[in-house]
Image (cartoon, rainbow over all chains, first blue to last red):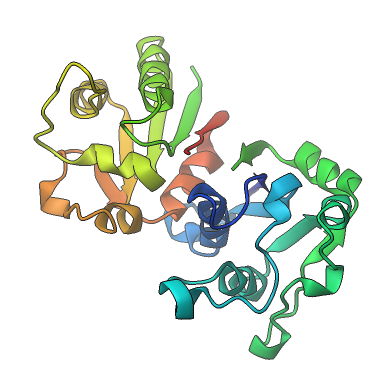
Length: 136
Length: 119
């Protein structure tokens, strides 16, 4: 029985590059990792957005219509559907003038979790609790 | 000895970060550590076989074959790879193809895990 805590820290804007999106999809894959682990072994990522990483998370995205690609909003909803903890830095949202209620929700899809807008100190705590930290 | 997992995301051409990841893996395995490498993003372009090594460009194939021969486990993200037009039968033999959970599983077992970022 062992759980390995991870922190995925996204500090690059969505759509600007590929890796900020890969952080999300890699974190989501925790849901299926058990097929490669022994019984009782788990991986628990926390997905954290800081700095410019908070850009491009807002709801109302039309990436599929305009570019034919899945929107970050859709990916964010999927993170909530698979019960990931998603932390978005409160101070950085304020810095860029993004209201907290602009964050997507997935209640309409049946998700129990919501994006947590938290002070940076909370994200720091998640980083300190993680065995491995990955910066994207 | 330790267990090292490297997530490698940069493209083969365009920065030296890819080269650094390969050198680091080689140094670790030569010291007797167990090493796993996960390719995602632009790094997946490096798993195509029959690369011509022009001296002005980094090469992936030679490094990967050498690392595979030394027992390093190497896996490429299947989705990232096919999105770049590389089919499985065009890949370097011995490189595994899997989904992102392969990386997380290796991270679970790792003493140290590093992410060599892209772009």
